[in-house]
Image (cartoon, rainbow, N blue to C red; front, side, top):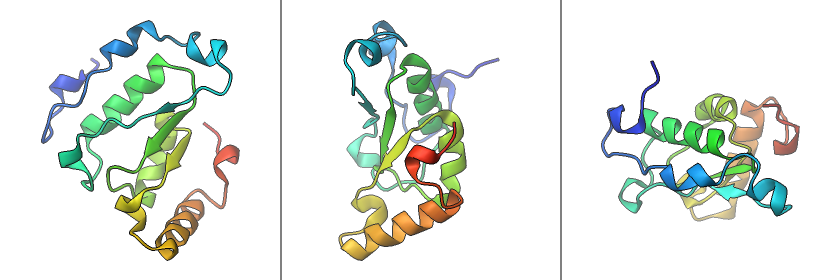
Length: 129
């Protein structure tokens, strides 16, 4: 049995991906070279919270709906331990933001080192799906 986003327990119902139904696996990625999808889907009130099962379900639905690279901004508190599941879901890259890096450049460097180490030293383009 497959769970739907509205069946997953969590603090809030995740956004629906219904509008993407028309944007199938052959559409934008094949028609517009260089197209990617920034999965900026977190309500502002949830910024900085840990990823939930509902978040992961939504990312899986987005990945299934499109073939374009899926970029996840760090609106939620993404940690190195989240990376394997995000990788298995098909997230192609993270876009680091102050939620995980803090305001200083040193925070960006620290997070990049930590995440790269968690991926076995692989750079994003080298990470297999």
